[in-house]
Length: 313
Length: 253
Ligand SMILES: Nc1ncnc2c1ncn2[C@@H]1O[C@H](COP(=O)(O)OP(=O)(O)OP(=O)(O)O)[C@@H](O)[C@H]1O
Ligand SMILES: [Mg+2]
Image 1 (cartoon, rainbow over the protein chains, first blue to last red):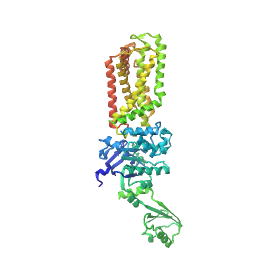
Image 2 (image 1 turned 90 degrees about the vertical axis):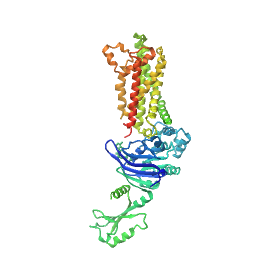
Image 3 (image 1 turned 180 degrees about the vertical axis):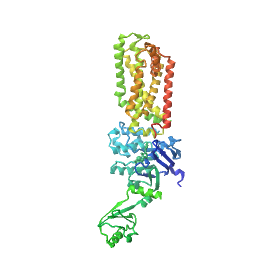
Image 4 (image 1 turned 120 degrees about the horizontal axis):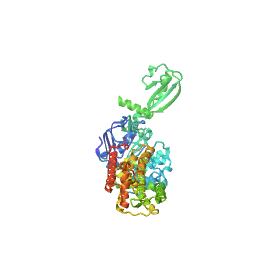
């Protein structure tokens, strides 16, 4: 158990059924520690955005409770919302406002007195200062996303939600974004982000949660999850198809494709020895000629499938 | 009460108004001026007095009400529909504000704009027709009450509308006919008796009549009834907005 005052966000039994009957969240329990970076992964439609929307007050929950800093999001919504910053998944901007005005607007809306100094700091930090007097509609997509981040930071939130901050963003900006998030953490801001990129979660997050069909199937420290999931596959294409896997190779993590033409070997990339050399020797020993070889990393989708199978077992 | 939020919304909306100064202020003023020229000067010159007031002067309160109504509804409905449509309303919905702050910000801005417009039209009318205002304080009271309650009505309309068409249809199909038939250009006593009775079901009649009373001391219906009608309408709109925010209707899935 984490001590209570170390928990900034506490979600219990959260359920959401949309009016059309679709169940987007099924009894989600989650505690986020103060100061951590938490990545929420999951395929399209898993319920990540819905989860964030409930916490921020954009969607009404059907069941369960959410507390931010000990305050209930329904009863004490003024306290909880003042602490939260949200960068939504969709790029929705006030097109005709200037960058500076739209950021100052957000600060006021969140109940803070005007502070041009803070607005300037946020804009400089996001490399938007040069664009401060430009209308938002004249900016590129990546810049608009940064404007949304600036707006979310305008009132100095202690809990920041980034819903797919790096979708449609180039490599350079992605690295800037990562650096920015780390900078925020150093200043004590808790960050919850969603992403479809496993590398991004691995790179940034202290912990990772995986959602699937409205359920949080796994919550784990990033390092241990990566170790567990760091399996790779070696695909071996053979000269001639095999009718069946030779019994002499049964002790290896091998599987034969349906047409008998390829073998798939799973191994742990982080382990001392991959066992590939040994595998190739033993194939040769069985008189199996290898035509081609390639390795692949477990894709995010495989991970989800693996996790869900595990959860079911 | 989150007064910084009210100020932020109010300033945001007013900035939008001043960015589009031509549509917001200049065009309604021009339109009303045309009414004065056509109805007041051209036609009015051939008409006698209505209830002891020259026709040109008689139509001033009605014309102001006409603009006030359509502008209040238009401004307020557009002001809230636009962020709903563009998706930027998420900011307001995730802000530490209750319906009260949201309404004061949006409706306050829309009403301010209409009041400003009403006063501008009043000043413009002076160029064409001489008039007196018998009860200036009541005139302001009617102006403000009407602007606020119809901005509130427009706000509800904007929350309700799912597309631009719906946004246009209510002002066009309901409000415009009601205002034209609401006694802006004539006294109800000029109508045949049957129509006089039917007209009493038109809420705009009460607004125009009350407003005209504040100018010339003449009215089609008792001024107390007029006042009660506006206040009742205002209360109904407030109740509806409160309900919308409480249930999240069209706002929070
Ligand atoms: N307003 C709504 N009304 C009805 N259903 C909705 C609504 N919003 C989302 N849903 C449904 O809820 C489910 C979860 O959607 P959500 O947006 O939370 O997923 P997500 O994990 O964020 O997906 P993505 O990775 O694509 O952003 C989906 O099936 C979606 O169709
Ligand atoms: Mg999403």
